[in-house]
Image 1 (cartoon, rainbow, N blue to C red):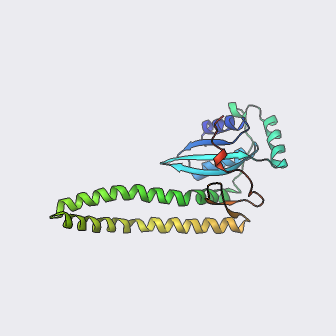
Image 2: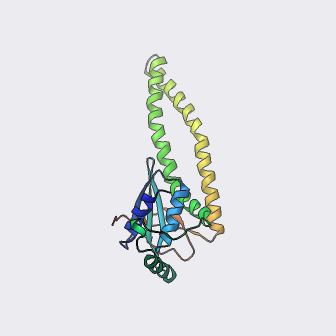
Image 3: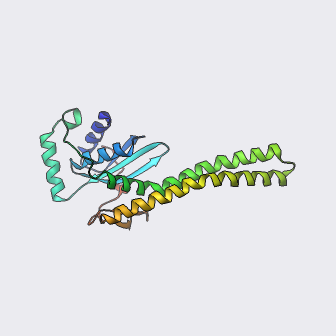
Length: 208
């Protein structure tokens, strides 16, 4: 994992407030490692969003007593963590759950955005195709509609894969005791047991 991204995150965590970390095109495993490292310093996963090919990882302070104790212990034990010093060890035992949460948070919005972005150029290509082979507007629109419909059919596997992934993620999270609740924007999300009141990324926009 990029040490530079780790150090950047730790500098933000040192501010003590909610954090929005631009993680570029990091893999889910890298994002999970970042989250697990943040947990060592008193933070918890809040959300993951995607714009184009870049991810933004949202983290919020974990106010549970044990989390605060762990944070104080690690900041004391690793005082130069944000400047290139040693870091506490992390493991990926909870990787499957973190990945499921991230996929669940991304899936609906990401699938809609991708379908929209793909559909617009498909319409333009279909109209151009119809213009090349059609004779008159009626013919052009008919050929364009058929071409567009055929292209949309090719996107159905992506749609099916997205829904299947969402179902698997939801089943894994619910089996682990996660609850599906609406956030401040009405978006349904899975949160850990007893975590329904934790603030969402709406308050996690500040970079410190």
